Length: 453
Image (cartoon, rainbow, N blue to C red; front, side, top):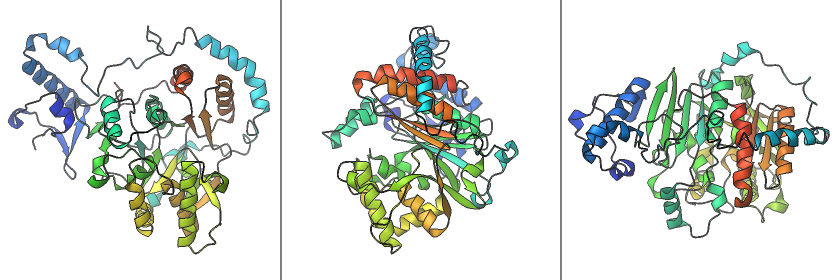
């Protein structure tokens, strides 16, 4: 069938006037009508778009120059900072200081780390044969989903300002760490063959992607990557949405998604080979948890704790448990879901989730999806609690550089399967501290995925 361009804002913005009969043939996801590209077809498509642009601009003779001209949402950037002569992360000037600082802090950091070295002998060694032993309850398939936003995108910010007059700009800023999160999955979870990025009509600029499309599927080396706009999984009446709590209630509605999937934010990274039984063992979901919840004293001080407390009361009421029964926080790293269970939970608490979806930004006394699903799974016997200890690590990236140095040292010593580096910085220190974390991550994850430029 003929490939047809959508008439979304990104296409209209560049003034395309494409005749359908002249557009080259491309693969299609016949079931859902999403443009699908192999590498060869992607190159052919982008070449065609450049030709159209050159004709419309009346500069067809200068095609080479036009090809180099960045198109919005696909800006060219050097993605090899280790060999970039401009040294964007200041490896040459700040890099040597990193080593000196870490040498000074190392002994003290390890001495103060209760988990450093404690579990090495007890930790189950990975049997590489198990890396391809996918669980039957997942239909022998595990996918991965990221929710992502570029909060520095002017168009996105303009949309946000229409609905929110007073917002925290730190919450939405882009840390450019999604690329490393994807590299971690690509390297350490080779059994994952289907990647999904859920976003607000945005495309990460490190992807080798079709120009001016915000919904598409790439197929490379038997792995697929699909960019999923919010509009495909969230009802129109709730759009636009800037609330991660609301977005997470609809991830299971991705049409091409398998029965089982890992859910990640862009600040979560797999750190070493992670077999499927990290998520499913003996037919039971492994629900990775932390301390007991809720923390009532924080309920009126923190949006997160307000949502956890509210969710805890809802679950207790549903299962006829005392209102103050405590469960456990979900590990603030990777979350694992089954679509069928997600639909079951959604049905059980439909009105509450609809209320959460109606909030464009985070709101007090709404639901926390991962907490409710995790507790539900354990109570129903679908899964079991697994204390994280050295399996997963969460740390806040703060203004105080010394604390960040100590946290990095301890993370490397603990060597968890997965870790999260959460942005808790002010603008004053953001650029300097992000260079530090990027120097660490690009060294830890140097190998590109097949989807990068």
